[in-house]
Length: 86
Image (cartoon, rainbow, N blue to C red; front, side, top):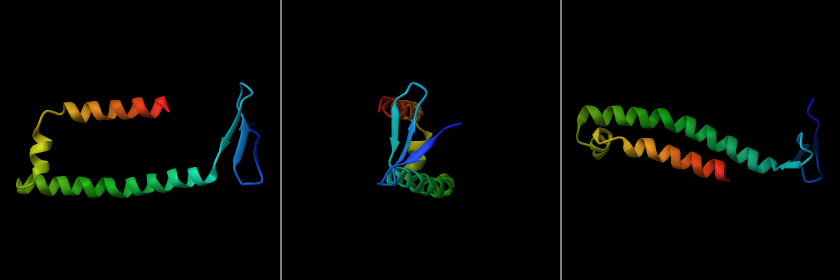
């Protein structure tokens, strides 16, 4: 069972199995959850936009989507590298 405590500022504190104290700021958690919700709302909109632009073939994004997808494979790897480096 994980024992979680709150300090006077409302931050979430717990001790990990190695004995190190870990503190989570509730404002940071709220910001991450809000950002995640906004991205979930944004993703279908981008999909519908790209679907529309591929049908009209007048949008610059159509050309980008038809190019070599090296960047679409490289960018997530760079993002994950930065994410796990922090």
